[in-house]
Length: 305
Image (cartoon, rainbow, N blue to C red; front, side):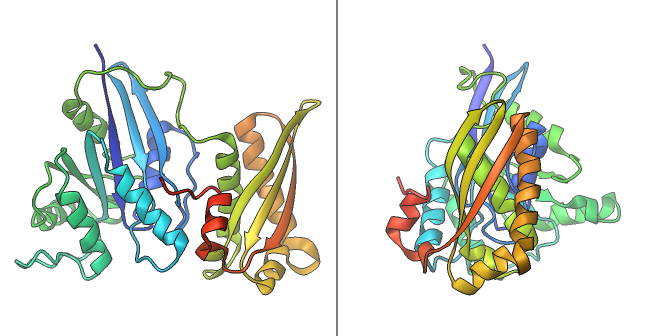
């Protein structure tokens, strides 16, 4: 009998959750960037080896709730804690720890709130200290591990680099030591449960995150309207939804240069994913305050359960 189980991965924005899971499954399926709210949905990464199957549940970064979209994202985090076999909290190794007795370990209230949610869980808990490749030597790593030991209630603390893979084999070994015997819930070739439309929309949104300034990505989403496979070419129509007319102008760019570049770079990634030629058509639409409108949130795939 092989082992299997569901493992929730959580943390603040930009701590490396999606980077870690891309490294584990060996494919760049989950989009990454240095901007908050890159991940907006729960999404599963499926790892298989001869010991069994681990289903990782990636979650949005913990944040303060100000809009309907952020309310949805917080719900996604809380729902990911239901019926799991283990939880992983990823922390940037350079986060500052407050070594005091009132359990306010971090300066950010949001950070402490996430830690409080995790502490209430009854399953095994693993703390990952990410970005140890930024430290100078092993002594620094050991010092950081010792600092984070002040946060009690974790069964293991594992130093990793989600970017270069350091420590990931230790994490996998630890998880298989925790998980119980059980069936495989997915096929051996499966690496995610995301529908193809969601993966494609995220590939396009990734290019928007790369190309646009810090403000606009918060107010942009992508809706894949249609996918048709004709004559060995996949035809895809997708809407880029933004909040303001001036945002639309920035996305399109002077003479259409920006939207063209976004389309070219998105198409290359989609062709690699589908292993065939792609004809990608992008349309930019303005929907004022879409991120704070319940109907828009549902229409664009952000549906609360």
